[in-house]
Length: 112
Image (cartoon, rainbow, N blue to C red):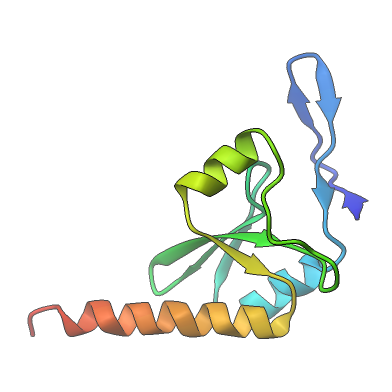
């Protein structure tokens, strides 16, 4: 993992956010699939939007990345919201397919 250039001040402690080594690839793949991607500096890694639907995402290394929130506030936020876990290009493709199916389901309920 590298450190993000946008270190965050937390009280008097300077805290640099860690970025998973595959995050740049994940963002690139999502953008290639037509998603809007916002890198966050908080309790999840990415906000991903497609067809007006937004999903909160957590990036983990392709190997050994346990799908569990870190302790503290991130754990609390992950308990409140559904977080989509992304490790590789297949996970990105599945996220896009999920958002597409939700979009189609919503559109099917709209009056014509």
